[in-house]
Structures are given as C-alpha cells and as structure tokens.
Length: 446
Ligand SMILES: NC(=O)NC(NC(N)=O)C(=O)[O-]
Ligand SMILES: [Zn+2]
Ligand SMILES: [Zn+2]
Image (cartoon, rainbow, N blue to C red; front, side, top):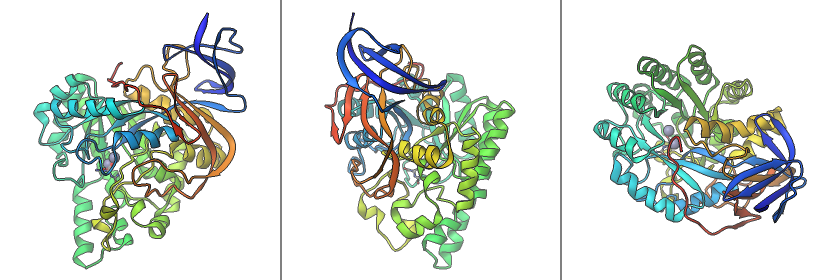
C-alpha cells in the first residue's frame, strides 16, 4: 500500500493522552495511526516534535467583503496557519454587508473559497433587522448565529434586544444551531460611558471603568435564562472574568446547553497592559485586573472553559489612533497567538495539560459547531496538523495579519509552531506558505 504522506516519529496530542506514533495520510484524511507505519509514501520527519490537531478558531473577524482593508481571508488565514490554525469560523460582521441573509452568505463564501488557505465556516447574524431571514441563513449553511447584547460598534449590525434574542433562540433551537452571544449589558455599558464622557473623561481607565465585570455578569445571566427557556444551545463568546465563567458553568451543571469561550488576550494581558500598550489592546469586554485574570485561569484550569477563540478583529491604523479611548476601534489582533498563549501561559507556567490545550483549541470548538472531521487526531479525521517544538522559547516577531499592530508581538513564548498541514498539504512551514487550494466550506454536521 502507498500513502500520500507519512508523518513519522512525532508525539501525538490526543484527548486520551500523548502517544508516540506515525500518522498516515491519504486523500487528505488520517487513515492510519500506528507505532510504525510500514507503507511507502512521502515522509515528514516529526521526531522531537509534538503534533497537535490544527487550531479550530471559532471566532475571527476577517471582514471580507467590504472591509478587506481591515483584514481579509488571505492575510487572516496566513496569520492563522502561522500559529498552527487549520480552520476558522468567521463572524458575520465586520464584513460589509454583514451576513444577515443568504445573498451575503454566498458572496462571502465565494471569496473565502478563493482566498483562504484553510477550510472555514461562516456565522450568520441575529439582529432585529433579520429575524425573518434566520431560516434562510440556516438553509444556506451557517455554523451558528451571533447576537450582540450591547452595541457592536457598527450601525449595520444592531444589538439584539431581549425579544429579538428570545425569538432568535427559538428559531435556532428548531434548527439545532448554536447562538453565540456577546454578553455585556447595553444599559450598563451605555449609561456608564455617558456618565464618564459627560465629565469629559476619555482615557484608558475611563473606558475600562465603563465596562465592568457586573455588565458581563448581568448579560450572561440573561442569556442563560433565555437559553434555558427556549432550549437553545448558547455559546458565550469572549468571557473575560472568572465569575462569568462560574455563573455559566453553574447553569451548565443544571442542564442548560451552554458552552464557554475565552480568548488569548484575557489570559495573557491585564488592564495595566492596556495602559502601557494603548489602542492595540482595546477590546470589549475589556481586559481585567491581574486578580480577575487569575480567577479566569482558575476556572480554565478547573475545566470549566470549553473553547479558546482569538476574536481576531483588527482595523487600520487610523481607526486605532485617537486621544479619545472610546473612539478607537475595539478589537485585538491575536489570530496567530492562540497556541502560543495556551502553551506558554497555560502549559509551561500553570501546568495546563497538553491534552487540555488540544481540547480547548481544536476538539471542543469542532464538536460544538458540528465539524465532524476537524479538531482531532484520529483515523477518519482530516489531516489538519500543527507540528510544534515544545521546548523552544522564541520571541514573536514575524506577524502575518494585515496590519501587524499586534500586542502579542515582541513577547517571548514557549512552544514554536514549525509546520502546519491542512488536509495533508503544507500550508505553513518555517515562515513560508503553501499555495491556496480551494478551501472547503464547513457546515454544521459536515
Ligand atoms: N465588531 C467587532 O469586531 N467586535 C469585536 N470586538 C471586540 N471584542 O472588541 C467583538 O467580538 O465584540
Ligand atoms: Zn464580541
Ligand atoms: Zn468578535
């Protein structure tokens, strides 16, 4: 028998543990995992390396079409693969138009398939403007619906009021689709922002104080209530505090169908870094104190967090330049850094097992969004692999996203991604990229 590729001598990181084995690839899929594969075929030497399932980043804003000058499928997917990523789920904003119906979905799908280096799925929006088009989005193949419970930053993607969220969840539940919620109270964040701004205060600390943890807790509580009421599957994106994770985890224990995402920036940076770095670290919910960050880590180490997504959301420098911190675009460029943060701050610094790194970054997001062939190193799965030199410490200098205004740059990490394969093809190797082949659209249960 001959195989397309044999990855030899690496240590596979599977949910059941680490395993030294060869990995055989045929037709883009893993077809054999054995201590020593005898078959002939092109060989990739992975001795001394750990093989992770490629990162499944369920939360990126690549913004194409319409805001490709912010980020696009080409540059975004390059940065992703350089960080060991092999699939992504793109948010319905900040592309213009946002994905609120089938036509927008199809336009984005076509561009992604032309330009992306790896397979991807698309989120659809859940807003007051398109409640009547959720069915058509479900039929078109969205992986999930995304709702903002506070202002999204864009008029064309209004926040879901309570009734919209409740009714949208009913539709999602009928279709077995997940609803992702940006959970911050609009009333609290808006009111607090008005208060400080009325006093002429527009600095970093003023912004941070306008989006306190209580605003996250209030919205998380409401989203959980609506999910419980409707039976919808809820995915809480970018939770920033340990208390919010604990609240959601408690509901999960009670039987609410909820999954919990946090992001590399909440795990790596604090409010003091925002003061030091400025615009590149502006996001919502904002970065928290060191104490809140440790509470978040404690929840993650306890196994209460399901997924880590980058929430990569860059913008051009002019939107990231202002004396008024409120006026800056909110969003962090981190699509290249998920594994680095989990391996350095998680594994090396806090003893997070490698199996948990693989689960948070690949298996759990793939499961939650029904991507049956992604996120796992097992026979029958796509050969989406990240080869990592675990004991190497390096400083991140080579960035591949469009603007490279990247807060993770210049920092030292442990565990370097050397090689990334998508369906058995090299998409990244030592600073170089493979050619785009036609990327596949990932639909739920596909
Ligand atoms: N429109 C955005 O890209 N928003 C994103 N921005 C952040 N997180 O600051 C988000 O996920 O809310
Ligand atoms: Zn958000
Ligand atoms: Zn986002």
